[in-house]
Amino acid sequence: GDTVLRLHPYDFDRLGVAAGAVVTATSSKGSVAVAVQPDARVGRGAASVFVLQPGATVGALIDATAAVTEIRVVKA
Image 1 (cartoon, one colour):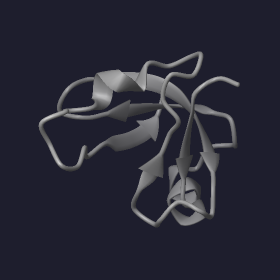
Image 2: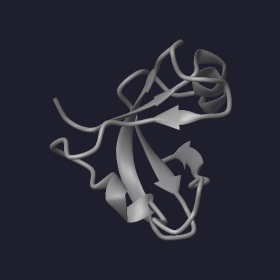
Image 3: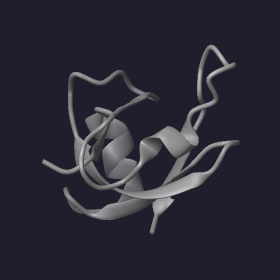
Image 4: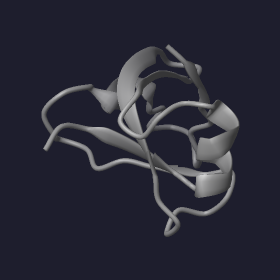
């Protein structure tokens, strides 16, 4: 399927959106609009996404020189 940003249910609920809603994920490198889903397997305060999927190009968020890529997720 298309690219989906997965968040811990606690973090997902704080966004106040429905599963599958499009949000904006922003890092120091760029922003992308991406669908979001709750996933209890993701740690609280973290996000997970499979790369090279159809849809959003999340590679635009990644800083290959950084150990961690921090993002901010907000309603689109």
